[in-house]
Length: 227
Image (cartoon, rainbow, N blue to C red; front, side, top):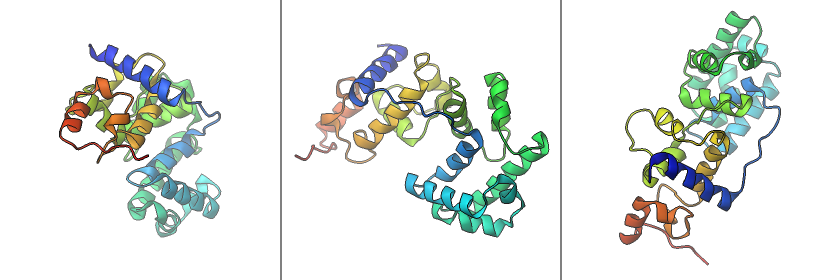
């Protein structure tokens, strides 16, 4: 099976298993960007707590920009690496303010997606995963963010060999218009079945497509479902 066909089959299986994710409306791109920065290497709970504390302490982005670094760091402490994240957030807000005169990212909707991507990647500390999350979730652009779950699952299923840029490799084989659903459903698969340790291969909807899973089952490295 060719990579594009395999990815399409994966998409169909996951849609049958988890359903079609619904797109939320009205996601503010700058809010999403800051949330994504806070989410790196931490839990969703800690990310949300840190973001809530940040906005309670500083209701406007201008206030965050003008606040002492130590105060911003204290506000986002639950996310971890708070000093580094605080500096990154302030650097990003400063850059946006300098270039746009106001602290917002809605202007990206008027740019060709390639230009919007390039602009986001030029921000301090923003890589492809973060830029693609903003482009996909806030603007509905055809970009496919790859996190640790997606990286693990796609390697196990044979969609990516683990070399080079996963965004380039996987984005090229995602069916047109399926970036959003596949992104969320692959993450869900990685959290519920294709876990880093003791994956539930027996119950996985991709079991027959996954040679890695078959091998792990034979070696007894997959967890049995508890009834």
